[in-house]
Amino acid sequence: MSKALRSVLIGLAAAISLFGLAASASALTISPSGAYTATASGSTVLTFGSNGQRLTCTGSTIAATIDSAGVGSSASGTTRYSGCTNALLGAFSVTQSSAWDVNVILTAGPLVGLTVTVPARGVTITSGSCSFTARGTVTVGHEYTGSALPITVAVTDLFSVLSSSLVVDSVSGCSPLLTTVGLAATYAGSYSLNRAATVSG
Image (cartoon, rainbow, N blue to C red; front, side, top):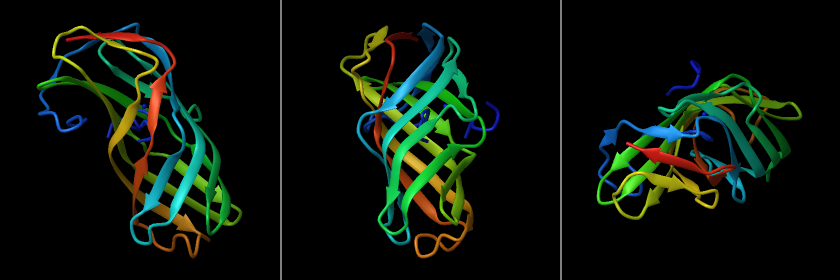
């Protein structure tokens, strides 16, 4: 999930209540710190608000480095999408064209939730003569049974997109899929991590 991105995917990384939990953010400690890779479980879908058109990618990975406090970044070019297509314009490429911030937040309520906010500035999407860029924030999260800490994040846990706020900030040659700057879009999908972690707070 960096200076350019603290604002999806995630993101991968991406500040928010989790599955209806009353959110009360608290300090956390993540072990181990360092490099993580989030891999999409199934497809990820970008849906445009004005016409309901979809850009579907069959594969997605987000590489990020976080510190023990859950603050980190995804370097430019390390988030990758594959098999991206649209019904109107065919195959697309999706490029992470700037670094993204990643922020992990612990939420406490009846259960313990872990959310990751990814302010995703710097996404370039192209298909032939069509090219557009998008920016915004994607938040993913997972709910854990019980309220006791520490919690163990397993490699089988799926972090689903809880919310997304994306907007097209430039567009060229993308009619009829896209014609105007400012078009809102939403992001859907879920991710798992490549290694387990322990979170305490």
